[in-house]
Image (cartoon, rainbow, N blue to C red; front, side):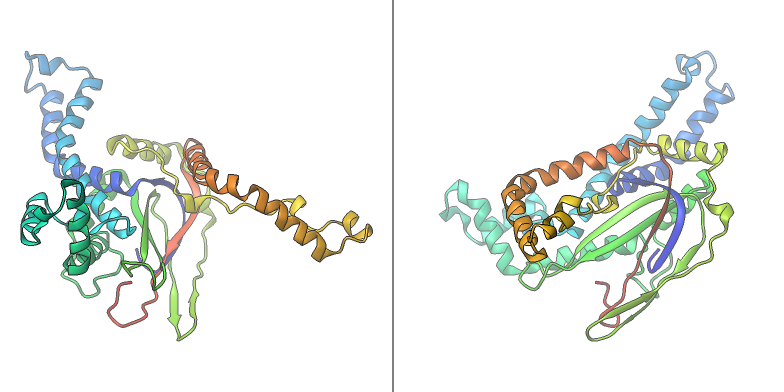
Length: 338
C-alpha cells in the first residue's frame, strides 16, 4: 500500500466503518454461511425460520455481525482519533486506571469539577500516556499494512481480512496515508495522520521512488496505463461494488482532501479597465485585499459547514468514479515510521 500510486475505478468509504465492518464480516462469515445454507437446503423446513423471506434473512445476518462490528468500531475510532492527534492524555486509560491515578495523585484535595482537569494535567506531565499513544498509532499503521513494519512477522489478521474480501467480491481495499506535520510548538509532536480508504477494481500500482536530502524530498512516479483499465465498468463490475457496499453496510464517504481547491475568480484579478483608469496592479491588489478582509470573518465561520456540505453532495453522486490515488513515505531516519 505504501509508496505507490494507481488509477482505478473506486469508491471512497469511511475508514472506521470499513475496518470494523470488514472484520465483523470475516469473523461472522462461517456462522452466516451456515445459516444461509440451512435455509437454502431446507434443513430447517417446517419451522418459522425456514419460511423467512430474503429481506428478513439479510436482517438476521446483519444482527449476527452487529455485536462484532460494535466491538471493533471502538478500536478503529480510537486509533483514528490518535492518528489525527485529536485525543487527550486521559483517553488512553481505562476508567479503572484513571481511578487509581486519582488516588495516587491525591485528587481528593480538589473540587469534583476540577478533578478531571487535574488528572489530565498530571498525565500530561507524567508522559506515560504518550507511549500508549505512539503504540496505538504504530500498531494501527502496521495493521493496515502501510509499510511501517519492514521485515515484520508476516501478514496481520486484517491483511487476511482484505484477502478474503478480495476473493469474495473481486475488489481491493486500498488505503492512502498522509502525514501533516504540525510544527515543533504543537503537542504532541507527532504528525496528524489522515488515513483514507477506498474500494477499487483490481488495477496495476506504480511504485513511488523517493529520495530525501537535508532540505528537500524528491519523488518520482510513472506508469503505462492500459486503456482497457479506464473504460467504464461493466454491469457485472458495478454489481460487485453494489454487493460489497451492501454486505459491509457502507456508503460513499468523501473526505475534504478530495475536493478541488477553489480557483480565483475574475474579480480577484487586476483588470484591463482598472489599468486604463490609471489604477495600477499594486493599487488593485491592495483593493482586493481590503475586500477580502471584509468578508474573511464570514468566510472563516462558514468554511467548515461549506466543506461538509460539498463533501456530502459529492458523496451523493454516482459512484464508482475513475480516480488517481496513492501515497508515499520518505523516511527521515532509518527505521522511522513518521
